[in-house]
Image (cartoon, rainbow, N blue to C red; front, side):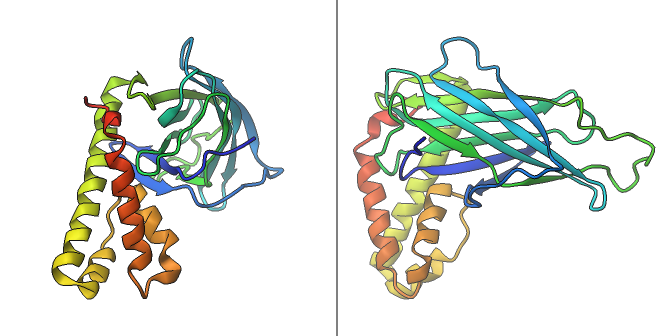
Length: 251
């Protein structure tokens, strides 16, 4: 099993009307004896470009009043096209207690890499802890994970030729995130040109919530006394993006 290189993997945990974005950096998570396991059911429909296999594990920790979810899955490109962006959703239903609604995405727009036909990628989340009961909940209310159902679906795919598959409204989100990242990269280049190293490093400290950009900051962290690593990475990302103008999902 191989994992696409140079992709930015992003997890979005949906909590009511809010979303939590986090890069997947926690590495492998081993199964534990006290976890319940639920096989994932792919509900994407027929002829989807990605085959999803795997399972969820759930552990209820009464002492800390949390339910912990882990996703252990794989995604295989079963289409005949190269893929430049893909997003998968993972959900639980039917059980009592807090349910999972997680989206994980991979974008190659700024790297030039692709998810090739026949390639398989690991899709594994960091532990996700949700509150079992609110403070004022009745302790007699049962919180049972035994009736849970776990499902996975393809949210959105963009192929390297610019065509797409999946939820059309998701394309606007992809476009917005890429445009915001491009604007940030260009802004930082302008700051360095106009104001120099110190102003650039100060601007770099500001959190952005842009996964592709935060990834290069993390990769260059060991060299944070010097801007060369980040500036070189920014230039590579801008050059690659300019070569992939056909991948604007709003076109």
